[in-house]
Amino acid sequence: MKAPLVVIVALALAACGSTSSKTTTNAANGVGAGATSATASSTTTTTSATAPASASGTATAPAASSTAGAVTTVPASPTASATTTTTTTGTATTRTSTSSTTAVAGPALCRAPALAISFLGQQGATGHGELGFALRNKTSVACTTVGYPGVLFLARDGSPLPTLPAHTTEDFFGTAPLRQLHVAPGGVVSFRLGVTHGIASTAGCTTAYGLQVIAPNDTATLRVSIPDGAFECRGATVSPLQAGDSAYP
Image: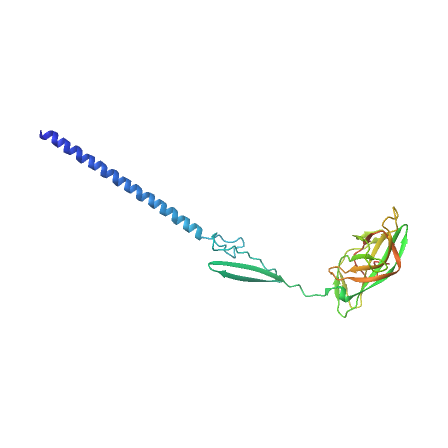
């Protein structure tokens, strides 16, 4: 009878050992999973806390989060100054960079207050008319100019007429190159208009008794009369400004 009892006790002890082993293994596995999770969490935290350097290498962009704003840097040119304004609200900080450019010292642009306009005359041939105008620097300081004036034909009473200007360096009357001009006090620059005298049709044609002019790089207007009137059909070629009265030889 003792032999069967010994067998039963041995089997019971074996079963307890197996259960203990499984419990230990499972607990070990649980610790391993927790370690892996903690490692992943640490890695994620480290990654989000590290911000990439900017493309220029002179600034560091903040990590993407709900409390940090994007930073924009505007590089200053040799003649520009930069200003950075920082505004903090709660935990959010916003930086705004702006730049202002200072022009290199030199003669000012020739603008309406410094100019006097005059009518040089008109001539025509084979259905084409040429009108010349001059702009004089009436101040005691030099100025510079380049480009095409804005033009608008005027009726006898000064009201505007339909005008379709076409800027060109080559017209029916010759070539007028585009160039920058330095205008001394009392100096003169000129331009010309080319009009047609209804070669194909006289529809829309009329007589202009004045011209409104805007100097290049300006917005203010100047007006000049055309004493005998000029027959025009809305369209007009416009030359760039030329030195002296060379635009209307």
